[in-house]
Amino acid sequence: MNPKIYIETSVISYLTAWRSRDLVVAANQEATREWWDEHSKSFELYISETVIQEAAGGDEHAAGRRLEIISEIAELNITHAAQDLAKGLLSEIPLPKEAEIDGLHIAIATVHGMDYLLTWNCRHIANAVLRHPIESVCRKRGYEPPVICTPLELME
Image (cartoon, rainbow, N blue to C red; front, side):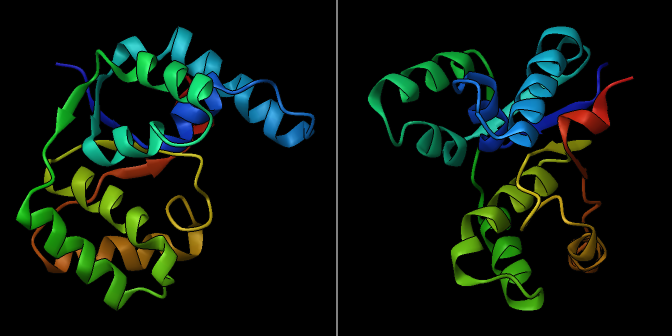
């Protein structure tokens, strides 16, 4: 059985976006494409309604590409347990109100027992300063958190 991975929206956005003029973003986009093409098949991929809603936003053409990519990925339910954990993450970790959706991504992945949460959101999700507090809140509530990482960290 392959490890389970929750794909957060930023990964889908990097995968489908036009190549950025910003060199760092362009490199991350390329790493995302490489991970998707060469490594994603080694994992069971999952998303949530939250990912679908975010992917559907913005430019209609770009949204269509994002939705097409995720159309065959299994969807996890947003359970009451995930909503409660997300509230706990927001109240116990120094996350701003606008990071509410980020807390929900973490909570969904955690409650559903994902092995990894793949993201390019290094401000509120894959953030070394927040890693320990996120893991602590999850464990305090009886959950083992997923490894939160970027596609670069999941390439062999």
